[in-house]
Image (cartoon, rainbow, N blue to C red; front, side, top):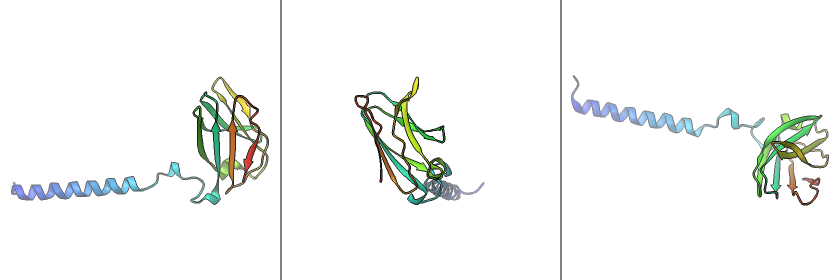
Length: 135
């Protein structure tokens, strides 16, 4: 049996190696959080303000297909990254939102957006919310 000081040294080395591996694993970005490339040139930024008290499901409509973007908590503003794969070739787009029982009760106007642009939409149940700003 090795002397006790050797075991302690081995334990210390093992702990240091384990901590190093954990730090490296935590420092890398998982592939699921990357968006069609690395920079803003590969996505559009969507800012949605929900002035309704209801939590809403948010969809991007492209060529008649509803693409779920995420959940909008009531009385909040959220920013979503829309990857190039969801924007398509720059054709007509529309935003829709609603509760699970009525997923398309709020509709934006038709708009066009490409990567690198910022899209803003305000959902307000008291007034029509069809105006979308694209910069």
